Image (cartoon, each protein chain N blue to C red):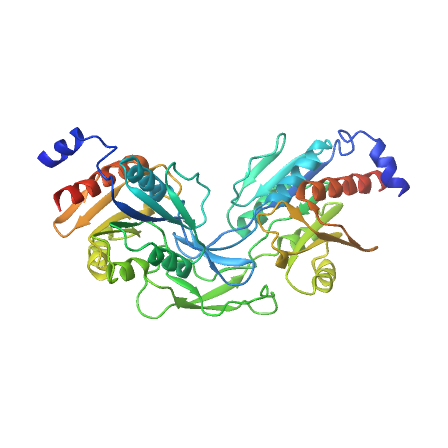
Length: 227
Length: 227
């Protein structure tokens, strides 16, 4: 509580000055052929809001983004990607960074075989063989150039806290921000999240995505002030 | 040629007055679970431009649209849908209409089993069992309340003319507009199409999508003038 009020008295413009932070956002798209793809409902809003909040606090922010329909926040550098593999390579290319915030909804799977031509609709519907995508959060968390602070996001639809707590340990990240996407958050402006750290869990009340971003950015600034 | 110049002298505002026309546009999204879906790269631009061109000629236009990021053209009524099944039902609900222009890139397949919870990434990647979606163009072409003019669109990546000519007969539509999507038309503002009718094929030069829309709308008006 003392820390939070101390932070509030600092100018927000400077709390992350000199820090280089990578943020991922949006969905990935995994092509099946030149026309079709597998994707998910991530709007990118939460990640873009976090990039903006970090940048507003003076951080040098690189946003590695899947396909979304959002304006680029002022002062933020963006790298656009489509697939999980492209996103991983773009993230690795940004290392070293002081912190990484991985909000992107990376497709867990891609098509095992990518067809160069549009798959024709002949006879029985195909069965789509999937291959596992790289786990960007886990790979960056275990990278030789691991950022000092790695923050993951987890979209869950059931037993959110249990899944997310296990996920933090499995991925090797420092903080995990869990949200319950069964509550219709995709594309919405509000979000209700739980922050899971080694110290325990904090349930944040339902608030606007940019308020979640502000609060998280303040926590990131606090981390660097205290470390 | 005489017809075309005669048409040009008519006021475009009136050439489709009193006609009710349905247009479909955009991709469909087929959910695998509450988070993931199968979709395609259709931007909806060509369909929205056609809806606008038909409306500008006095038609009453209903646009049945999948998820896109496009403004609704003035004077056009829109019904938003996600899946192929929803699109079929929305189209059937609009019958009778004088003409139907089916530009939507309807997913050929959906997941055989829709998971109510986010599918967990445990062990081996799943194999995705697909089921065939309803064929909206074919169903409307054979409907008891079939529109007088049914226009289909076909996105092809190889032997475009051959595939599209066969498709016109198989679907039972009057006209088929074929485009070669191997040439990077998704999201672009230009399109190169071939119009296939019972009378033969016409290759239209590369032009802006709203020029394709104007030319097609003029042809639709001509159809009703001559019929």
